[in-house]
Image (cartoon, rainbow, N blue to C red; front, side, top):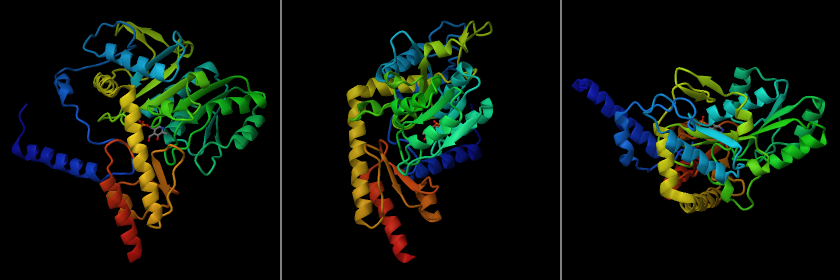
Length: 372
Ligand SMILES: Cc1ncc(COP(=O)(O)O)c(C=O)c1O
């Protein structure tokens, strides 16, 4: 392939613009500073993970074997029952959430779907797409679901099954819902048919190491769990993993002649590179590396809270959270540092975020405020 000079320049310009934007962002949970050069050689194939990674298929330019290892790794981490789980590498947390809602709907077609006000917009997208009757539950100031409101809302529909999305790290505040408590609340109001999906987009890879460990995994009562691969784990492109109990997946699986395989996934063609990237991350870090990386990020998050507060910006974080929450920043700071903002702003200390960048943001916030 040959490009004219003017087109080459466009590529250079784009590279420099993305490089510059990458240096300054602090308000999205994406990692920086990784190196995937050993994997570049795979880019010469049209890798496509069509169909079920655990089943043979006609097209073999795929990374199914690596995808299965990634799924197995997280299945163990999330205490999935050894013979009753299935999963695949998705395009990200959104696909995983829609998948969880889909499995929930197939199990309980006349369920009411419950999720808290702080839930990521992918869940509202999912309920719209799937035509689910739903109920938005209030949240506590720390971002966790209000169990009291859940109880009240579920009491009104106590003769209907429930599909619930629990947040294991809300988008803005990293609030964590307690999956076991959700099940208890529903049982106590008489709702016994419950499908529970845990959205662990950010926290999934480190939540198992926290003390106390949040109640969110299969042993805690989850039916499905999703995580994003391009957040804490540092994949350079959107991806994720979704896991579910196998019995739920068996309801949606179909044999497809065209691919010579089974299919229970949402997509048709599926990325073959992201499973290789996730495999590379988990094999190079291992459990100990993941724990160490989390602790480094957490130390920096603790430093950032202290520094913000010392400089007169009231900031806080949930226990063991990598997300700092502070009052909404103005347009200038929001745009320069790419700070996600709604009724609060936040900064997320993911791998590759440095003390120097955090100090720079604090400096900019406090100086500009002084000038106002
Ligand atoms: C809690 C939560 N769930 C789901 C998502 C969606 O994940 P993705 O962007 O990987 O689709 C996000 C993204 O920020 C999130 O914060």
